[in-house]
Length: 146
View (cartoon, rainbow, N blue to C red):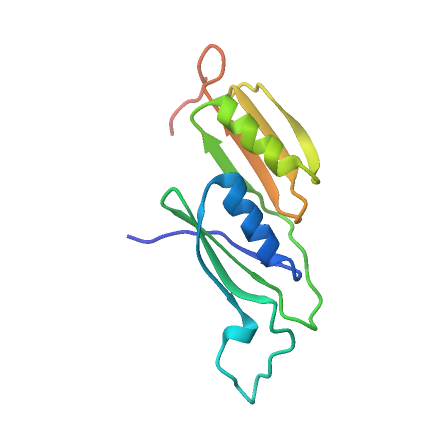
Protein backbone atom coordinates (compact mmCIF):
# COMPACT_ATOMS: atom_id res chain seq x y z
CA UNK A 1 0.00 0.00 0.00
CA UNK A 2 1.34 3.42 -0.92
CA UNK A 3 0.80 6.77 0.81
CA UNK A 4 0.22 10.09 -0.89
CA UNK A 5 1.10 13.10 1.27
CA UNK A 6 1.21 16.78 0.33
CA UNK A 7 4.59 18.48 0.76
CA UNK A 8 4.58 22.28 0.98
CA UNK A 9 7.48 24.67 0.57
CA UNK A 10 7.64 27.99 2.41
CA UNK A 11 9.89 31.01 2.11
CA UNK A 12 11.35 31.07 5.63
CA UNK A 13 8.06 30.84 7.54
CA UNK A 14 7.58 27.07 7.56
CA UNK A 15 7.82 26.77 11.36
CA UNK A 16 5.05 29.26 12.22
CA UNK A 17 2.89 27.96 9.35
CA UNK A 18 3.12 24.35 10.49
CA UNK A 19 2.52 25.36 14.11
CA UNK A 20 -0.58 27.28 12.94
CA UNK A 21 -1.83 24.19 11.06
CA UNK A 22 -1.16 22.04 14.13
CA UNK A 23 -3.33 24.31 16.31
CA UNK A 24 -5.99 25.05 13.69
CA UNK A 25 -6.48 21.56 12.27
CA UNK A 26 -5.96 19.69 15.54
CA UNK A 27 -2.93 17.75 14.35
CA UNK A 28 0.23 16.63 16.09
CA UNK A 29 3.73 17.70 15.00
CA UNK A 30 5.81 14.55 14.52
CA UNK A 31 9.02 16.28 13.46
CA UNK A 32 10.47 19.70 12.85
CA UNK A 33 14.14 19.65 11.92
CA UNK A 34 16.01 22.82 11.08
CA UNK A 35 19.08 23.07 8.84
CA UNK A 36 21.15 23.85 11.93
CA UNK A 37 20.19 20.43 13.39
CA UNK A 38 21.90 18.54 10.55
CA UNK A 39 25.44 17.21 10.91
CA UNK A 40 28.04 19.60 9.45
CA UNK A 41 28.85 19.04 5.78
CA UNK A 42 31.80 21.10 4.45
CA UNK A 43 30.58 20.65 0.86
CA UNK A 44 27.12 22.04 1.74
CA UNK A 45 27.52 24.69 4.44
CA UNK A 46 24.33 25.81 6.18
CA UNK A 47 23.26 29.27 4.99
CA UNK A 48 20.44 29.76 7.50
CA UNK A 49 20.36 27.34 10.45
CA UNK A 50 16.83 28.43 11.46
CA UNK A 51 15.17 27.45 8.18
CA UNK A 52 13.15 24.25 8.41
CA UNK A 53 14.70 21.28 6.62
CA UNK A 54 11.70 19.00 7.20
CA UNK A 55 8.46 19.19 9.16
CA UNK A 56 5.84 16.49 9.49
CA UNK A 57 2.34 17.03 10.88
CA UNK A 58 -0.01 14.12 11.56
CA UNK A 59 -3.69 14.85 10.95
CA UNK A 60 -6.10 12.05 11.81
CA UNK A 61 -3.94 9.36 10.21
CA UNK A 62 -2.84 11.58 7.33
CA UNK A 63 0.40 13.49 6.94
CA UNK A 64 1.20 17.03 5.86
CA UNK A 65 4.91 17.62 5.25
CA UNK A 66 6.77 20.85 4.59
CA UNK A 67 10.07 22.70 4.58
CA UNK A 68 11.51 26.09 3.81
CA UNK A 69 12.83 26.72 0.31
CA UNK A 70 16.62 26.78 0.10
CA UNK A 71 18.14 30.02 1.38
CA UNK A 72 19.61 32.18 -1.36
CA UNK A 73 17.33 30.73 -4.06
CA UNK A 74 14.27 32.53 -5.39
CA UNK A 75 11.09 31.06 -3.91
CA UNK A 76 8.76 30.07 -6.78
CA UNK A 77 5.58 30.36 -4.69
CA UNK A 78 2.62 28.04 -5.05
CA UNK A 79 0.33 27.79 -8.04
CA UNK A 80 -1.87 25.26 -9.73
CA UNK A 81 -2.81 23.42 -6.54
CA UNK A 82 -5.06 23.52 -3.46
CA UNK A 83 -5.19 21.47 -0.30
CA UNK A 84 -8.69 20.10 0.19
CA UNK A 85 -10.29 19.44 3.57
CA UNK A 86 -13.64 17.65 3.81
CA UNK A 87 -15.55 17.30 7.08
CA UNK A 88 -18.68 15.32 7.97
CA UNK A 89 -20.56 18.51 8.94
CA UNK A 90 -20.79 21.96 7.41
CA UNK A 91 -20.45 23.44 10.91
CA UNK A 92 -17.02 21.86 11.47
CA UNK A 93 -15.93 22.80 7.93
CA UNK A 94 -17.05 26.40 8.51
CA UNK A 95 -15.09 26.64 11.78
CA UNK A 96 -11.90 25.41 10.06
CA UNK A 97 -12.50 27.68 7.06
CA UNK A 98 -12.92 30.71 9.33
CA UNK A 99 -9.76 29.88 11.31
CA UNK A 100 -7.66 29.42 8.16
CA UNK A 101 -9.07 32.64 6.67
CA UNK A 102 -7.79 34.92 9.47
CA UNK A 103 -5.16 37.13 7.85
CA UNK A 104 -5.62 35.36 4.51
CA UNK A 105 -7.57 35.95 1.31
CA UNK A 106 -11.02 34.41 0.82
CA UNK A 107 -11.39 33.48 -2.85
CA UNK A 108 -14.87 31.90 -2.55
CA UNK A 109 -16.92 32.65 0.57
CA UNK A 110 -18.09 29.64 2.55
CA UNK A 111 -21.65 28.70 1.66
CA UNK A 112 -23.97 25.98 0.37
CA UNK A 113 -23.29 24.39 -3.02
CA UNK A 114 -24.97 21.65 -5.01
CA UNK A 115 -22.27 19.19 -3.86
CA UNK A 116 -21.91 20.13 -0.17
CA UNK A 117 -23.87 21.84 2.60
CA UNK A 118 -20.91 24.20 2.91
CA UNK A 119 -17.84 24.91 0.80
CA UNK A 120 -15.33 27.74 0.43
CA UNK A 121 -11.90 28.53 -0.98
CA UNK A 122 -9.14 30.68 0.52
CA UNK A 123 -5.44 31.33 0.63
CA UNK A 124 -4.20 31.47 4.20
CA UNK A 125 -1.76 34.03 5.66
CA UNK A 126 1.17 31.74 4.72
CA UNK A 127 0.19 31.52 1.05
CA UNK A 128 -1.32 28.03 1.14
CA UNK A 129 -4.48 27.66 -0.97
CA UNK A 130 -7.30 25.63 0.64
CA UNK A 131 -10.69 24.27 -0.36
CA UNK A 132 -12.81 23.44 2.69
CA UNK A 133 -16.17 21.72 2.62
CA UNK A 134 -18.51 19.53 4.55
CA UNK A 135 -21.97 18.13 5.02
CA UNK A 136 -24.48 16.71 2.59
CA UNK A 137 -26.15 19.22 0.27
CA UNK A 138 -29.82 19.97 0.77
CA UNK A 139 -31.78 17.39 -1.21
CA UNK A 140 -28.77 15.04 -1.46
CA UNK A 141 -25.97 14.97 -3.98
CA UNK A 142 -26.77 14.40 -7.62
CA UNK A 143 -23.59 12.68 -8.75
CA UNK A 144 -23.42 9.71 -11.09
CA UNK A 145 -20.78 7.10 -10.33
CA UNK A 146 -18.34 6.24 -13.09
